[in-house]
Length: 175
Image 1 (cartoon, rainbow, N blue to C red):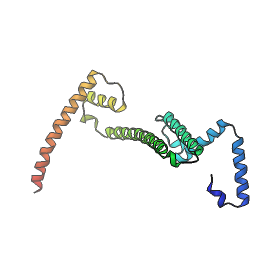
Image 2 (cartoon, rainbow, N blue to C red; image 1 turned 180 degrees about the vertical axis):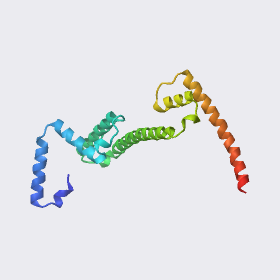
Image 3 (spheres, rainbow, N blue to C red; image 1 turned 180 degrees about the horizontal axis):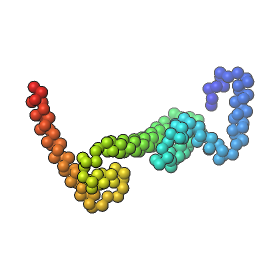
């Protein structure tokens, strides 16, 4: 039921009625496509979505939203369905959360790669740098790479422990 029926004049009502009749005459597939397009416009432009992450998940999410909307439109008395509506919304919200987490992980990985490129080559051994590159890019690491990564991790832990002592000494100098 539309709120516009109380506010519109006769000409607008006629245009809306013709539009609804035209929409009702469309085949079901075309209606689904139009619904998907309008939802896509509401959520985001399609070109802003990263193609390697979540095209399938994004389309599944759109399908779920359309299914929820159709279910909601079919209901006449919503007070009895409050629990179901809450469940639908919680599920949709969790899907949005997981999708956004995947996007943020990819963005975080890209920033880490950019920061890693700022490290001078002579700072790390060649094999350690190769192992870190593999880990950053998500490539398969072999036992040699794992050895160099473990070695680097223990070196870092040792240096961080020493850094605590250097901070104490620095505070002494600043007195």
